[in-house]
Length: 243
Image (cartoon, rainbow, N blue to C red):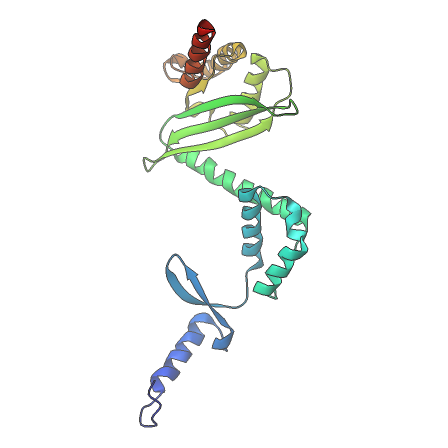
């Protein structure tokens, strides 16, 4: 760097004034370098506590961590080291933040579904855990207004007995109807395995939809049998013959 007195520093003074106006900082020493996606910029040293809480909520969901992780002494020490102005939260506050994150994501998916010009297809299946509790998962598949294929899990919920077709039909009506996701009028097809209760469910649910004029071709292509399940049954039958 040239330090000779013959060289002026007016340009540097103008630069400092510009930075002060741009970032609202009176002391450039209190600013931090912010690097994201290959871009480097200056930002203030103060943090947005709302953004910090949102990052913590996303971390807990992504890595399946307990809500109490925000109360761990080591985690709090790390946050304080990164920024001494950080405000600690409790597990209950973190739980509320995760639910807000879910509501925010659900709102985005509902907008995508409502603005999609295409019909919507579903897949559904049951799953039992080691404690014998049963769960039902419903996934939606569609092409959005930008012609991009999308799929989202609409529901993964506990589903206690009975698992008969009529009970499943009522569950779908509550979840997908006007008081839920409100997409029954846009349904095209649903893919299920070959369980007996699914036959009763499809007949009951399809009758409701056809009576409202919600299905094209009166539901002729509404029921799609899961190819993976069909192949699984074929292999099992073949193995039995071999034995």
